[in-house]
Amino acid sequence: MSIETGNTTIAAALPKGHQIKQPIIFTGTGTEYAKIYFVNLALSILTLGIYSAWAKVRNKRYFYGNTILAQSSFDYHASPMQILKGRLLVVGLFVLYNVLSGAAPAVAGILFLGIFAALPWLILKATQFNMRNSSYRQIRFDFKGDVGEMFGLYVILPIASIFTLWLAYPYAAYKQKHYFANRTRFGKSAFSFDGGSKEFFFTYYKALLGVILFFILIGFLIGSQHTRNFVDGFKKGFTEKFEQQTHKLHYIEPQPQSIQIENLPQQAQQPTPTQPKSDVKKDPKTIAFALAFIAIVYGVIILFSLVVMTYINTRLTNYIFNNLKLNYMRFSSQISYWKLMWIYLTNTIFIFLTLGIFIPWAKVRAVKYKLSCISVYALNLDTHIAAQSEQVKAVGEEFSDFLDVDVGF
Image (cartoon, rainbow, N blue to C red; front, side, top):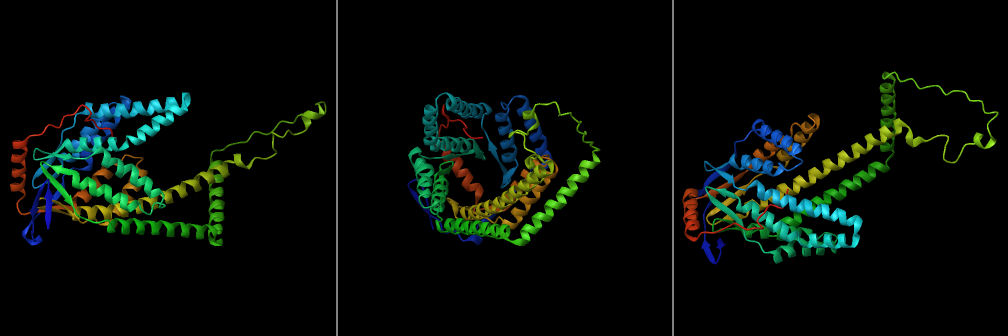
């Protein structure tokens, strides 16, 4: 096995049994984070979103500071003002586009194309900002990306995938992950990802097969007599329940007053085309049933999307970490799809039942489990970190940039 670091190739044949496992531990709790989360939320609302930049820094520092590797935590160094500048830039472009959409659609179209063309630059700046403001034992991370290469990864490849009915998208996703992993630095050392695209094709195609089978099943159920009977029964029961609740309100419908129409003109006695005798669409029972049915359909779609996306992210996260190296260190990820899916499902249920109050506890649950499944293997992690620290001090590097702002939310 060889690992490339700049122009240097390091021969590293380290048996797994001789390496020391260093698990990643998250020490935060939902109750601690809830205090930060709700204060951030309240201040962001009171300041019309301005405080959200400070809120992001507080959130990042809490999660970084509670992520422990070899008895040392990570650090986040970003300034809220840098984040605020980036957000004002994005909001300004959004407002300008909406104003031009009404006043000068042609100019708005040109602006949209310009923003789309600048997307690789925006992704590059956001990635560099987050990496350069993240550190472990006072050693900063970095991302050595190139705008031209990013344009090919995030514009050319996705557009080319359209002409293959998105069948080539797994290759685009693979190239993006491969590029990011191999361009990420810790100090002066480069990460190395040597995985292939086969796993990406297998994962995405398997998920696509699941989507196709899901819609076939839905089509079969919609067309079956059993489903129609079920829907009719559901509608009948829903209508009866609706009428019972309506009667409990003791609503008395006013009786129509009798009107003498003998002396009215004949034209006034005839119903006009704009006054239909009955309007089924305005029936409260029909509207309520339609809303309930739509909510159920959307709920099923959201649940299925969560199942598919969790499967894709779990498989690819494990694959990327299991093929990622940094000099003499390697990584391992053993995230269980079923355990993570259970966490996501129960989190969703608790968030719904508590009207959103459970959100901070849900986030901590998911982060704590995922980090507990990731480990670092090295012969001597302390020696490697010390070597990196000396190398950074000897070479030196200035990260400041007047455009080094966070353009993401």
